[in-house]
Amino acid sequence: MSAKLLLGAERLRRPSLPVRGQLPPPLAPAGSDHLVTVAIPNYNYGRYLAQAVASAVRQEGVRVEVVIVDDCSTDDSYEIAQKLQADHAEVTALRNDTNSGPGITFNRAWQAGAGQFVVRLDADDILTPGCLARAVAVMEAFPEVGLVYGRVQHFEGDTPPAPVEAPAHAVVWSGHDWAYRAIQDDRNLISTPEAMLRRSVMERHGAWKPELVHSQDFEMWLRAATFSDVGYVAGPAQALKRYHVTSLGQSEGSVGTRPFVEHLAAYDSWYRDVADQFPAADRYYSLGRRGLAQRAVRHALHSYRRGVADHEAVTTLGTMASELAPDLPRLATLSRYARATQRFGPRAVRMSPPALWGSACERLRLAGVQAGLERDGY
Image 1 (spheres, rainbow, N blue to C red):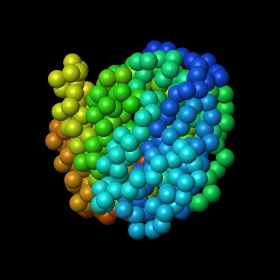
Image 2: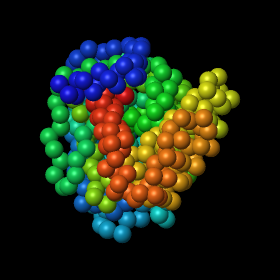
Image 3: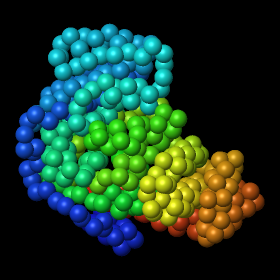
């Protein structure tokens, strides 16, 4: 009941996206000759590589080619990739001459393939049974769709969970509507392994950008949505995304600024590419910068309310927000929290009624956002 209430509140705040098309269950492509390139960039994840490859070559309803590109791993990854190539006719194993980073490595992998559709599968992630056929069914039914994604399950450790199973159906949204919603709150709605891109969209409008170290996926989704529609497979999990203790991003006890700096770089890069092709580029770019400013202030405020604010980090976030959206009302609230923390200390601020109330409201808002993402995909 609480999840429904939270979702209802979120829907009042952000109305549902207009649906452009739908596919009822079951989702399956009309033919079996569709070729999907599963591109696997790998660095030092040899221990997970066989799991990832097995999840790809066992897909039914489509033809699959797996291209592994090892980025000069220091473990036995390349030897494992070569063995997988020997064991599976669908697998090709390549290796970079120098360590080049995940963006360049992924670009080499998908460009080495020939599939009409492309999936990026990091070596430590797993595709769920039938996910490729479901995504291809959407692509086939709606030629204007360039990006399809679905539900993703996150897990930690070596043993993946059983994937969520449910009758699959699909909805299609205007790419422009979907992009507007994503940048409105500055949210990356896709984790990556649950997404499929049409190769022609990537060839026509550009590959992943290696210079965007931590936001190249977000920028790619925005670019695809600018020039094509977006499909969503609802119901079952499309992929399992593995998290590691050392790579969970910002911890509960810190204020990270890197995700905000990276998203700003993604907006700047996207805008430079589409400004002369997308009539609403200026409006979307302004909206994205404002959404980023709002999220930065929310994050900084939440850190003050939890008593974990790092002065340098929250100052950086406040400065960024004031430059992006100088009229943002919450900037004044952020300044008040900064002054109160300096005067009374983080513990006193954390236990104050405004902080306790604000923290509770923010947690409820985030829970509502997550409930909407899990149910509707945005």
